[in-house]
Image (tube, rainbow, N blue to C red; front, side, top):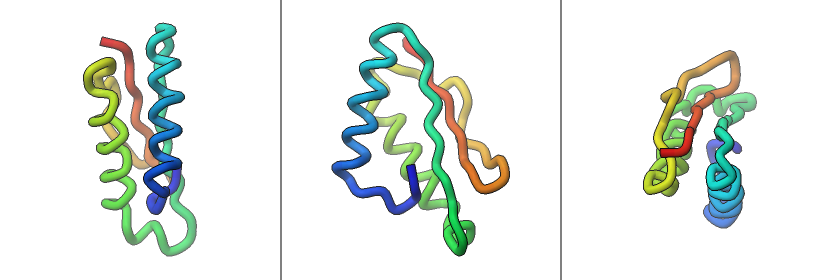
Amino acid sequence: MRPKIDTHDLEIKIRKAREFLEEGHKVQATCLFRGREMAYQELGKLVLDKFAEALEEIAKVEGFPRMEGRRMHMKLTRR
């Protein structure tokens, strides 16, 4: 994902993540920052929080969002 991802694109990724979680797999969400987007890391955190909030009835956050270079990762697992 990117910090400025469109709502429809995010909904598609949420739907796909829900399928993986229902099969019993873990999901890792990654937000990639390019160029000057590094100055707006809070936008990436908001996108990942929205992702986790949409899946909260089926998943719990295993690894909270953290930066590694230009990527912000978050891991979700099935409840």
